[in-house]
Figure 1 (cartoon, rainbow, N blue to C red):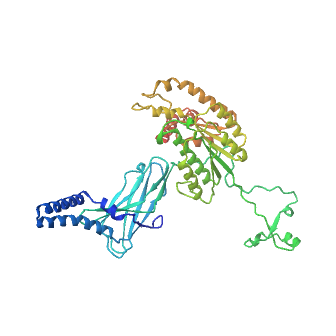
Figure 2 (tube, helix red, strand yellow):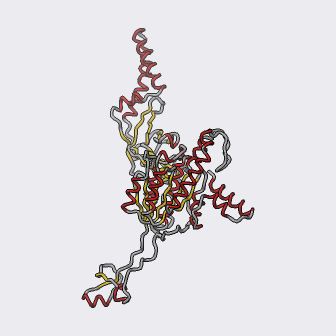
Figure 3 (cartoon, helix red, strand yellow):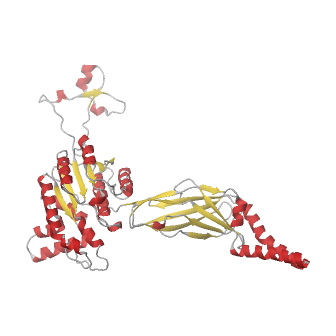
Length: 494
């Protein structure tokens, strides 16, 4: 198994002798103290035999220090990650390889790799003696529920003497980076009203009714297919001319992520912001997999652009494809902002906002609604995932209470949120109505809702109002209603 980076060699710290003396174990310090005491007593009492014992006890730890300082082991290490990008909540395997590049056999080696606390405890290993030009391999697992980039390493090597009197720690120089990306859900392939396929058929050119004579040729270039030679133009211009190839259309999409701190509720992996980040990753990779050129845009105006291709089928999976990796790396480190509105995103879309727009939005006020109305005028088709952030607040305030499901009541909810429920429902309905009037396709989302189920509602042709609306729109037979409700609850459970 090849290491992920070039092997790093052992680094000797300055002042090795002083560090080795500090590396004396409790046993070594006791031997040294006992030896010095015996030598002092032998001097006072004039006992030569006691002096010999004292010198022996003193020489043992000092000799161990000298042996470790003069150790000529040449050890190299390598580290590999599988995978280098791991979704939040899933494990990644870290493999370590230690090579003995010297001509002498090593002693007992103790390894310790530095990892952040959020990934778990520091792994420690004890390696048996490594023969000349030999190697040992060990591995451990790390897991994080929080997105981010976490450094792994450098690896520390602890050398010890056979008597356990001294331990010397040496560090390697190489370190690696583990990227924990948001969870990605596979979305169904539905056609949004007003959208084109990512790579459609060639766009028809505006030609006259005269027919083939109006084909626009160009000069022959090395590597062109001879079957594309336009002989009539060749005879006219006296050099080889070929027909221009009609290039396939690359359609554009923008995924707008609302990162305003005031627009989200909850904390940690169960917050509305983490749900929004996961939704943005799922939508972006879904569109990349369909061949779109996707731009990830935040309310702060920061943007990341990547192009998909139908030839890279499956690139919308974690770690698959450079375009998908670029999006996931950006979303792995995105954080809440202190912004108040969407004006910066509006400025970016004003310069180029054609194509499909998918916005994942938190709590809104009238100012943001007006900005979203202006954003809609600059796009071809617009879909809004409108988060009911108060549902995440209710879950956070439950404490030891019992949750009765989405839209229900729960014990342990504070009175302020309980009393404000009807007013908040009226406000959300008003926001949904205003967005639909502005031309948005609105998909309301609550805590526990399944994103694939919400995305499937786009195929119905209506505005949609979440999985519960799908249940209400289903046939009135008891079996159909029960089946739809069960499916939505099962998919949205978390």
